Amino acid sequence: MIPLTVPTFTKDMEKAAVNALHSEMLVGGESVFRFEEEFAKYIGTDYAVAVNSGSSALLLTFYSLGVKPGDKVITPSATFIATISGSSILGGVPIFCEIGNDYLMSLESLKKFANSNYPVKYIIPVHLYGHPCNMDGIKEFAQHKGAAIVEDAAQAHGATYKARKVGCFGEAAVFSFYPTKNMTVCGDGGMITTNSNKVYESAKKMRDVGRVTKYTHDRIAYTLRLNSVNAAIGRVQLKHLDEWNEKRRTLAKRYYTELYGVGDLILPPESDANCIPVYHMYAIRTKQRNSLGAWLSINNISTSVHYPIPVHKQPACQVYQNGIDLSFTNQWSDTVLSIPIYPTLEHKNQEYVIEMIEQFYDDKLYESERMKEAGLAWGKKLV
Ligand SMILES: Cc1ncc(COP(=O)(O)O)c(C=O)c1O
Image (tube, rainbow, N blue to C red; front, side):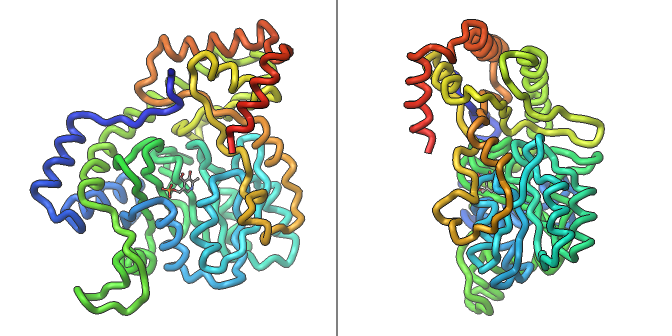
């Protein structure tokens, strides 16, 4: 089976992990602080705070920014639910906005809030699939509203907008190191990047049970730290990140060239001088999504749907309905399909994926009753 994605684990990571296990404190070891320094430098922020997941990063960020019950937080619904978890658990109210053809927060959709009397407090642009959002437009809107930007860069380590890494454009940004991401810590992990000393100091304290000294705590908080061994692996992964992202871009380029004009496929946005993506996922769209997914699965190719239920349709979000038209987001979730992309994907395997997709359309397999049924069954397994 050709997997959808494979985390890279090499000898140098193994060595770093074993070294950390032998020579560091398992929690709060040297590797954690080094990883933070190196990550902040890589993104171009003053600070970085390592935590145990991207969701924890969002929680601590919104806590540190002082989100209050009822504060409105604009975010796309075309994302993973964790985008809204941190702010919502603290009482923030997500306001779902529409995405554009690039699957990212649409400036057009934001304009609707500019004209109303919406007191927007926060904006969470999501650099979905590793594609950078139009940060100039979002920043202009945020300034107009007096809102703070928290970038969700969980899928976009190393992507750049106007030659600057995403993760440095707002009050703070969050990254995830979950094993499928462009870089991982070989387990759960996350990072906050920020230029705000307030966010930095608060997040550091709140990831550590609100500790001010060993046994003095001036806040009620949780243990949300990143373990030393994971940080040690993360440091090595970070060194490889640019080279891996380049490989992903090469693979994406081949998909663009060979899948362009095939069937009804809509390919993801390409890079331009301002936006250099890192292709966390290569997400195509087709009306025949479920049959194509089933066909590829029958032919030993893994695919997935990110995401089959947009956030505004999640059972947990029924309380947040606001009547905004999200028809394109709905259409996106019904048609989007992620196909294999990862730095070690071999040329011959990518060619096979392309061949199988071409065959699906050339032979009009979407018209066959067998594929229609297989598609229905495949679709049911998505959620
Ligand atoms: C867009 C987005 N935001 C937030 C998260 C949350 O990260 P984690 O899974 O590390 O909690 C993820 C991870 O899947 C994500 O894809």
